[in-house]
Image 1 (cartoon, rainbow, N blue to C red):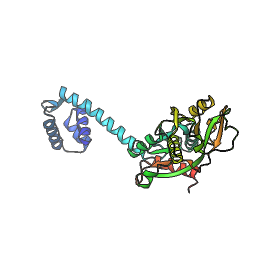
Image 2: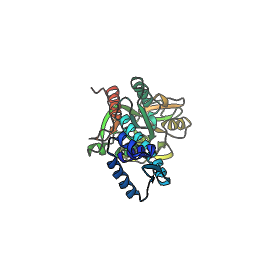
Image 3: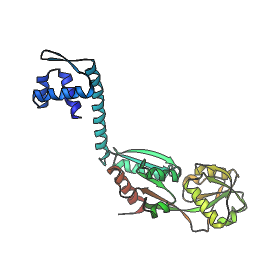
Image 4: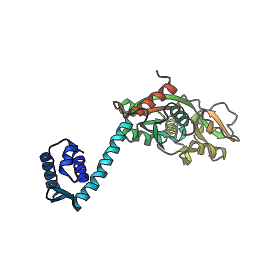
Length: 296
């Protein structure tokens, strides 16, 4: 950077004496710098006419790129400073589709009221994809579920549980089970299932529950949205495992039967251990855990 700065000063003044004074160096030292630079690039950058310097075509070309490089460097330094400022930094937050209608909007709205200059880069996706983003450092934080127990046990991820949701088997209102108060997943072995795509959190729960019950669900449709599952259940296409407590899943034509199994949908926040991605991300993580998990 220093080399670009003195060269651009000289390119502007085209006067060895004036630039030496401006840069606080001797004229002979500045002359040696210029000779060294010209040797490095393999061309003379100034035409010499007596004591006068005139920027030539090669010099103008180098000066143009040097100005752009210096501007880019300055922008990079400014971005680092911004990232390191918890009040002006950027939080790279990933979250599951199903949290985009309630948890995430509430958190962002509340946080931005307190910290209006913090920026968020948001990504939605399947739970496993979001976990991979944190692991490869393309995301600072991810709101996922269920708990990625293997990664947490191996020390590859930190996890704080924020809330849990009881699971239910959703059936059409005219289904033979619609009047029941609860049901076991094992009873649904012969039912057609509408499920999330592989890699999504609720799909992981369905696969685990049915495996524990000793059967594989008969899938008639796979989706990326829980609301789609609920809508297709209301249309009579099949049954689905859905979390209780999500107002967006309470729709006409669907009855939610709580499962007798004790398995719940865990929702939490994950981040890499032993890292501090940026003060803004740290501050937002602390806000989330205090607000939802009740941590001091």
